[in-house]
Length: 127
Image (cartoon, rainbow, N blue to C red; front, top):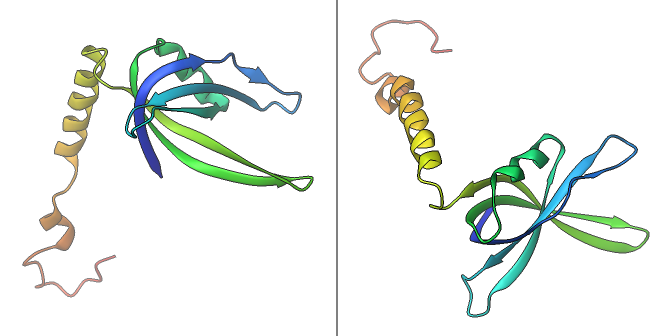
C-alpha cells in the first residue's frame, strides 16, 4: 500500500472493454519532491464513477498499489488506485467521514476488551 497527494491534473473518460472490464485513468501532480511529478493512476470497475465527485486542480490524497505484468516480452507497471479523497477542498465531506468514524469507533471494543484483562477466572476456551 502506497499513498501520495497532490493536485488533480486530468481525469479521463471511462473505458469499457468487450470482456466487461472497465477502467478510468487520472493524473495527479505531486509536489513532494524538488521537481513536481505527474503520476497516472487508474481505477477499475465500480470505482470509475467515484472520480465524478472530483474537479481539476482539486487537492487529493490517493491510496494505491503498484501492479506489474509482462505481455509479449514487454513489462508494464500500473498504479492501481483503491481510494481517493479530497484534501480540504470540500469541508462538508471530511466532517461526514469523521462523524461516521467516531460512531464506528465508539461501538468497537477497546484493547482491554480484546485482551480480556483480569478475566482469567473461567476455564472456557477464548475462541
